[in-house]
Image (cartoon, rainbow, N blue to C red):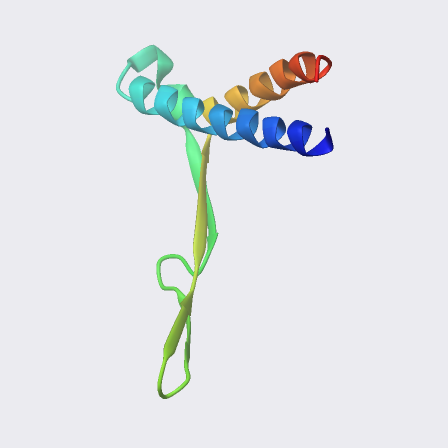
Length: 89
């Protein structure tokens, strides 16, 4: 039962992120909706990744997260929908 709730939580969260990305991409060029595409990139090793040279292998570490207003709103909405939906699980 706990696995099912966890799986549904992750699914709702990912769907909120993906739908928010699509909405931001579509609204980017619409003048009165362009604020939905406002966002920031947060990361480590951007633009140059942190690298460790081990003579045989060079390891490079880096990641970034792009977040925008539409994603935040869709994440909040998806978590609210999950809260209502999870009561039946």
